[in-house]
Image (tube, rainbow, N blue to C red):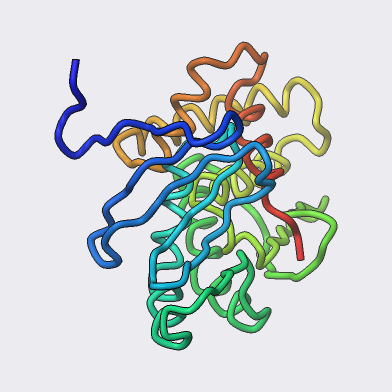
Amino acid sequence: MGDAPGNPREKCIFADVKEKVHIDAVLGEVLLRRSTRARRVSIRIRRGGSIVVTVPFWVPYAMGVSFLESRREWVQEALERTGARNADLPEGESVDTLRARAKAVLPSRLRSLADRYGFKYNRVTIKHNVSNWGSCSTKGNINLNLNLMRVPEPLQDYILLHELTHLHHSNHGPKFHDELERLLADHFSQHAEEEPFQAIILAVNTSRARYPFTHVLEKALKEYRLV
């Protein structure tokens, strides 16, 4: 049976590399590559202006697309700045830029999730550290790492719900995981039509872990380094 139009067949280049073409509405043709050698999602602009997004082999292509969409303006600027010469685009941005973005986005999203699920916290602070993505104190204060702006939205939501759950359970015992898993299942069902969330749901549906959402999301989060 032939491939459906607009759904190109995944092409195996080597045993440890697979790739397919994605058409971005703004950037045009983008090559998506899955490689066993990749440890994180990355974007490379080849000589001549072609764009390659590489993801770890187990990561769905959808996460590479989501990462590309979050960096679209950056890619456009890099193309103009370099004249389409080779350029590697790391996941990171300047700390000041990340902090400004985090302050504009994360507190309101945390408040929205807290209101939806009935959590009450004291205050939220945006920090920059390399030890954790977030934390919750015994006084109900929540700290969020500005590096959360470097990860896809589903992973951001996972951390936010994780810290909110700590308002009810200070440790990582069974009661904590039971509540977090319930929250994640409900939240992801609300976004089931959105592509980045679909990739996670697909992985969860094939997981045999006791807490499949937590297992899949933690595995995905490990691909992102705190810097």
